[in-house]
Image (tube, rainbow, N blue to C red; front, top):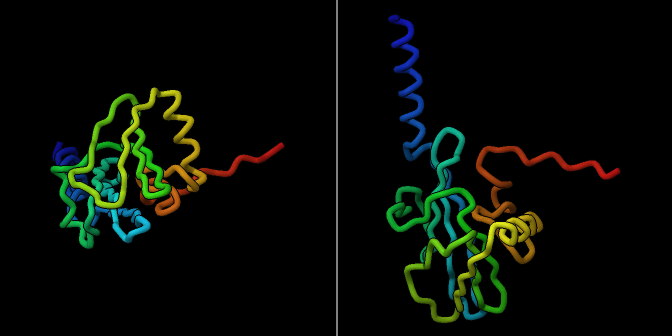
Length: 157
């Protein structure tokens, strides 16, 4: 019984330590308009496997993890897909628009789109090309989720 309590307390202490500042990973994508206005799409991943994610869109670059404001963020993995072209930032959400940027932009037009599940999945597949559509966090910046290997490439037959 004593060993059981020791193992349980050790496990709980490891899990509780996984959310301290040292284990958080910050990913950011910078969007720059033709007039130099900047928008940052930032995510922070928590937990042992990085599977607890918060996303925020700001007009100021987040330098330190401690400056990330979780209260105004969107919680969940893959919260939206975005594209940026001709000073227009498009956000694509599955089933409902769950987040709007909390500030006004001068030179960047922001549009929000609600997609059904099938259309969202088709668009999500395009995020792996990282040309027009991007996931959060961007696959190009972090190879998907933190500390996870890239998926194996399929052999063409």
